[in-house]
Image 1: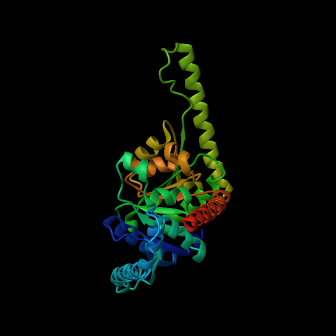
Image 2 (image 1 turned 180 degrees about the horizontal axis):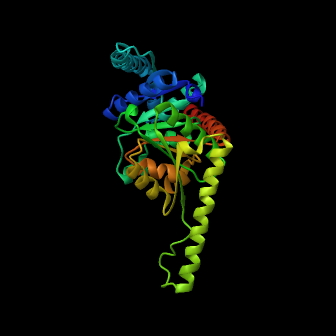
Length: 332
């Protein structure tokens, strides 16, 4: 299996935090294994735009030169910090470039992905309290929802010591792409590949006690669902030409994100590879999806992959949203 081409052009975003340092370490290790080039980037705020969007009326024009100078100072400071960070790896023989981006972090990262054709974004995450995460979100969460290419959310840990990769499959259209990527990564890292399907036929919470006949019938359907899922996992491997002896299959009944987390801990999986439908807006805040629930509750690194049609639509959505924001600022 060709592992060299799994990722070729990696963007690693840093905010110079400890979690971002873990992300950079993981990105460098991955780039070495996949023979990919890596760009280390930091996003600074667009100072003139930030002031323009504040509803404080007119009169800011005389400050334009000062705001522009402040913007340049922020860029220069970020570039110096990036170069210092990159120097540590360059001394070890790692080739990486640096770039300062300007704007809202997740938007600037998506712009860079589209303009420079990155095929993977690596970020760290510091984690947030539930209420703050709902109200504000985080760069990792926003990228998980809106970035058109796979997003690797790195947790603390050493990629080189990864012994197991967990790939939950729900047999949706993204499953083939997800499985192919997980298999290539497991080969590149020398890690054991585990495939997981979580089914939840019923638990009938809050229902009256069930009769023995009803329990027996439900037990039969659970066993049938499990056999069907195992067969589908085997067929998925065969379809992609993956040797079934290289993967371990797991079918578990329960709540998806809880089972995924408990299975990852039990297997000591260093990476979870998951698909995401890329919800945004109110539905993304209040509903989310299984990938986001795992992102918010797991202590493992997570690679989030989207179906290609969804990725393409996300690009169009971001372009439309950007144009609308620019028009609003122009009116102000």
